[in-house]
Image (cartoon, rainbow, N blue to C red):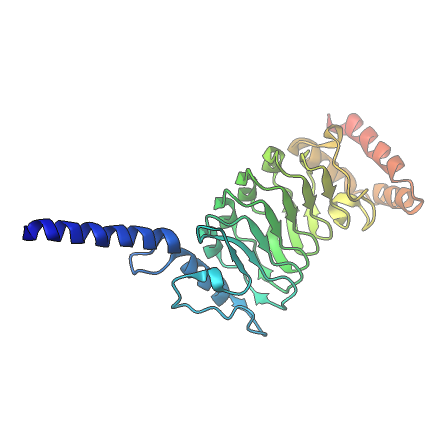
Length: 267
């Protein structure tokens, strides 16, 4: 009889723990919510002059925290702190917010590299890191985000080529990479709206790209062609010609000139 009571008590306790864990997310071996740990990692890597991220590291449930939104089953789905004068860096621990759907940190002063761990978040639909001081290359891991529809990385200091794997992001509708230091090749991305204006190594001049238009498949270069074109673009005479065309509002003529050079020397 006593054994039967103990079994019933054990089942009740186990059921309570199961329900509690479901309600408040998964726990680390130390009993800390994984999402709390990830968010505190993000907070600790940022400089927050106005203390808008006034989160309690001892909390079990982050869903009541400022700048955080949760789903009905208490998982973090959105982190949004735009225009809060945040600086510092974006912690790789963001890759542990596996239910995150929206990341909005635009109009701050965050620097360093964009963490490749963002590519581990399969539910992400929106990323806006525009108007910060991010540097380095765009992580190719972002192309793993099969649900991503909206990506803004404009007005940063990003360099290197746009990852070729971005061509695989078939759900992407909006991509803004304007006003960085990116270089060719430019992959034929599927985004309906694609902005690369203000990248001198791609556009020739600050306003030499068409702006919010897709890159036509016919103008997408492979790497050998882009390397050939890079050598051509080092010619002072060619640069003068391109700048003349674009200054006369005839960038289409410049495009025709580049097409001729590619056909003549790079194919």
